[in-house]
Image (cartoon, rainbow, N blue to C red; front, side):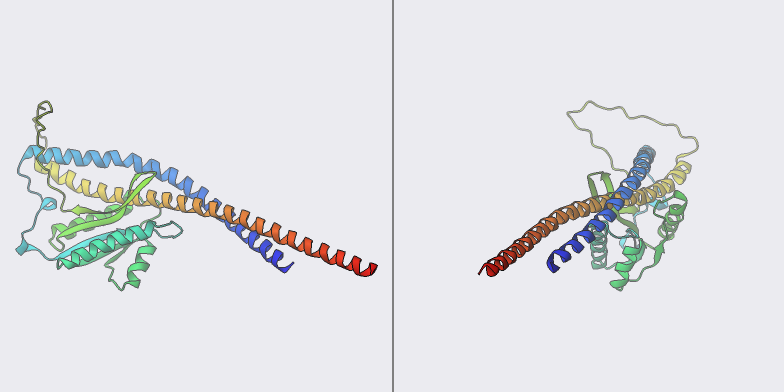
Length: 297
């Protein structure tokens, strides 16, 4: 009887856990739907700003802007700023592990090239990880679970100031890129210097495309002074949005997997309980029949 009671207690605990994971799955699903609308809504703007900047820069020709600067070897400070975006909570599967793995690999690669790293970390999981690794964190980023542009803009301006003042040679962001609901990739994106526009080669099999000629008002430099910082701010904000949405997807999948496993375990424990109960009943019947036969004798 003791074995059957132990199985009943364990099955009850599993069912309670299932209720918790099912609730967390529903919460993560609701948050994902809300975050997905924001992420999908901001991506076209971010993409279009980059297209406009690239087209403007290619039209102007020789582009000279602090955010596009390429330092010679003699002018380098050998300092690189790396921003790593993680979550504040766990129970999100391999989400944080993948981001930290890719971010740490990039940091080690930069250090192997002789660079010093200035580390900026968002999320309690990343802070705990790098504290455990005894790595100096230059700044802990305080961004809410639902990122707002007003929270991210000061960080983007700070990174641009570091780069334009020559204190760092480059800025990178490690985050989980949200491609679709089924695909999220841990990436380390080069934020600064902004990639200079590449000359597009014409495919001989394609019809010749005419290149538009623009008249600028105000002048191209004024437009670049406005558009290039806006491009950086939009890229940083999009990285935080992608990271948040990917986190909700990872937690939703992890909690669904935990709920399914709890269902399987509950069914397995029910079968074990039935077998234990059946074995107990059989033993009791055998004892009763033995007692009857002893009384006949």
